[in-house]
Length: 299
Image (cartoon, one colour):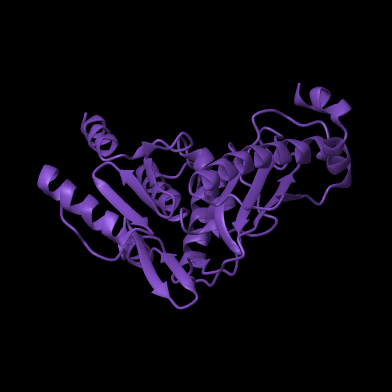
């Protein structure tokens, strides 16, 4: 009901709801654009029309009695630092609180989120006596991964055992937290540049899940040199070959790329060059270039 009321008020002010992200509202003129992003009752407003932004805030204050927090520094647990080279997004405070409240021993140095040859099984090992702790910590890691792409694979792996964690799973969780304790300051730097190019990188790990023999899809999209979208997720079906797994990963990346291009066009970024989808599997690339095979691979 609150969003419906706010939506109504924004449309009265001339804002249009984005068709690609319903929490985004835009107001465009020939020379300016104002962008409003909404999460429940938290709002970010930016754009090139300072007078229009001031009028927008005054109107919302007179209608809803809002609080203007000034320049964006903190939003939904994300700390925003404005640097000469761009905008840095981190979660240092959240990370410190996560580690302080964690009862696990994290003294051992970990240089990677998970050991490179580590496999988690659903039925190997004794049950962990405190499953609530495991679920709480993994849930917090899911929240932390919004600004830490390097944690995506580890978090999706740990999230598969929330219903029944075993001792090897808590050992893997301890390894991830040890890695985080030595990399607390890491985040995302959105570099300031006028050369906006979109690049997509896709990969898969064929039949890497020892429990289901399913493959893992991984991708990252870079706007300029800054990551803006990423995912690591187990594929919904089994792939018969590494080429098929790579092709499914490319398809998922293409879907995300298509959505992001449409969103950027709404924001006024209309001069994007043809997006390059990078993949390291030549067979999957040949399949993607030959439309004869598309229907066969999608079934």
